[in-house]
Image (tube, rainbow, N blue to C red):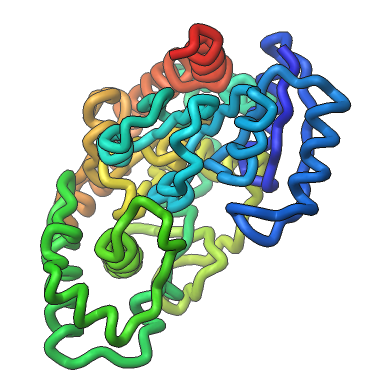
Length: 390
């Protein structure tokens, strides 16, 4: 099959391209700048030229681009989009209803929401990691040797602190509205496994927020202002959770934070700078005793890519409770999950002291990812669904 792959230079672009080729497909890779997600004549002209020149069998992107969906419909060619972000607002474009779209969503809550739109080819489909590349680069993890003698770091966290979240950039809100929203933020921050932010944004609260906040999507989009505000609050909750959790851990263990964010927010942690996705980040995961995943709160149920990145590199994963992680992986056997700040500290202390158990868990987590969440496995399953017209 000849696949036209439009890339926006996402972290996984090399992995997905290598996988398509490894599975025997011909790949045409392109990036064309555009000004608007819905309509751009220059983009359309250049994209049409590629479709005509190469006579592609289908189009692939990470995330959904209405521009590309409209062109796929015009050319009557299948358009596969694997959703990388949550929320992903262009999924609410009218273009999403085209029969030529094949949409794969990693978060089951988002999948259920989209299912109500009666989309023709919609699938709940977790993300993946390139275990083949990681083993070639670092060698396959082994439980008997594990990372013994190579664990240079105690506890590591790779990711943003979201200190530039949109909630903190609001210049003015009436005191009673800000207090109500801060109450939601504090309450949700204590709960794992269920997100009630949107439920607490009543029509009256949203109406009053609209008077002071400008957040808009195109009127044709099939979503509400409430969902936009919920995503904004979830960013703020993630910021507070990450900062407080990392500060707590830095007082109880040697913590290294790899981020482009303001590290003064976690003053007792060591700064590791930023790491590139392909080579440096997997090395951090492999050579840390504990790797933290603190999920962006707008990912309500899905398995975050960071969790798969850690386990796929052979690293030990300590993550907040996340429904689909708990369904697919066994706590205490393939990863470790926590459901409170106290449990986070308790489990980090425990696994720092129990090396053999920690290495066994990391190894079993790697085996599960290799078997079920490798790119080769997931992409093959995806293309089979597309070929069957499902």
